[in-house]
Image 1 (cartoon, rainbow, N blue to C red):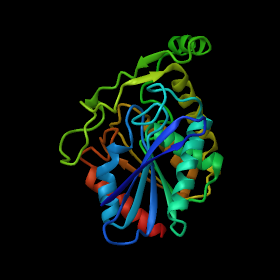
Image 2: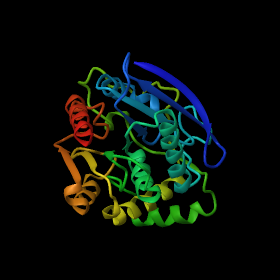
Image 3: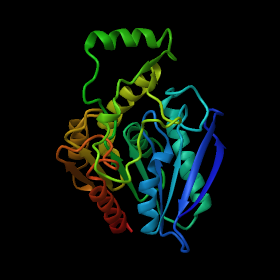
Length: 278
């Protein structure tokens, strides 16, 4: 697959890094824009891109603010509006690069929250939305006392950075030979600021309540063994969406299904779903 990298000015002036993978020796039939999760970056989706480009899709991914090669304090988002607008800018640039191609939006974990909010708030011209283990709620959130303390601190020290507490072993199980590890990757981190936590928490609840306002087909995938984000929150969204949503439950599946032992099956599901939308 061919690859191009570039940078663009984000919604709040922060420089955002992006890359595109293209099929070899043929024109793509559609474009898929990926929004990555907390603490990682777009490069970790190269195996997903390899599969989708082999099926004829252009794949684009940016590094969100405070992540990967993009500028910003590690693990800090200025606002959900900024994250949504940066996703919108990636979609706009995709249309500029491939004006004739239908476009899909694909978000994982934190990126699933951002992608869902982007689809709801921007109403972009997309053919469908893919949500993978979206962070709409956490699998196990802080207790009431910790939430109250955090809400107090966010107004005082919004950029206070804490550890996510997520172990790499919580992300996926060994067995898929193209899995891309979190460990030892200098572009990955385990930091999150208090403000980012509150942004994601509030935006997740808002997106759940407004999810039935979506007017595009949705593929929603989540593992019941996810130790990071809430399977039940995804199930609630799927129920709200009804027939417009294909909900795939992976029994025992971990958080990063595209790196987990279900990866090959998941990529088949995604490719087939994209093909049917076309």
